[in-house]
Length: 514
Image (tube, rainbow, N blue to C red; front, side, top):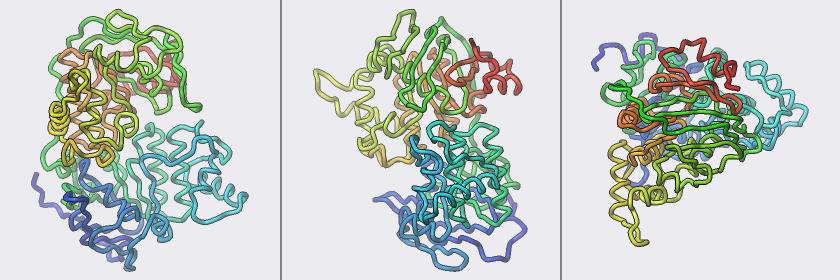
């Protein structure tokens, strides 16, 4: 891609930037995560930080927030040198951060969660008043007495934001803030961020959803391979051009060459599945069928029974009531390993701790899940070369940015670990694949690669169930669509027959199957 447009726009502010970085460099062993990073953030600006998985975004914001220190380079806040020793030091300098994964206690109420996360002390009455006042002012309604475990993902995010706002930040860092939100919650969040920006708060916004970035942000800094590729005015570039800057070449669209369905492979009848989480949603009287070669997309806001459906299908928990039939045989009593031997594979939403063991190497993570299906053991002995080769094959085919198969799962960025977990399941040639949030936290190029790999599986005869909150993804890849609401499901319908009104009704629970 070539462009003669200005890199930073035609209007140049003469004011001193709120935050400026120059020469920021950080290495881990022999991997350079950030190399000579230069970035400036103006007062009241919503600035996107973009890049592929492993481009260096997480490392950079961790340096800004004081979680790690740069090896070299300088940072300034309004012309005053800034080098935080820890996050508390960053907050003293009025820098707040809302992480992608919330740090909340489900059994505690809103007030208690906010109180334990504050550096300053307030009287209980004063803090309760401040929570209510701030939440109303910024369109983030919260009741201090509500138990967090009973709240939606969007409501939980409000707690994190209000906790930051109580410390009057000049800069608010948002890491993938819309990954767990429905469209209405996204619109409300954007209204809040725009209001903050209008009052002078600067926002550093990390997201892989380029349409949202175009709608919300003023400028963007694009990282690739740990280096700044360009800082630009968002309005001057299309989403395709931004994606190209991120990956270095054009991003290919997904292609489906055929839709040939076979016989019914999976049949669920009157399924009831209790949630292990005391604040979770149980599955109630769920009926579903899927044929070989078919891709079924299941939409819905997180916390409506998605995890419970996954555990029922994967064999982690036995259903409370109902039948799960695979190839006509009842599999209710089969555990995860027995189901995998039949060709039923799954990739859960939680990567670290559920899909992968953090303190084990990538090759060991392959061994514990694929030892039988990939014949990685013989006469009770581990076939080390086969295991390493399979892990390395996953790394190569799915472009996992890491040293090699000996890397610990915990050392990978979230997006790269996602690519590894998904690749591990897809390369086992499953008959049925159940996958929750397949491209969560993954950059545009990797997301398209994963989606195309899923399509290719279906074209080869695999039945695929995709559970996702990304409606665009489901409508792009799926043959049929349904919604999971309060543990109940609507009748699946062909994607081509659906309009926005139909999807809205399904997502709201209006068309639930009784």
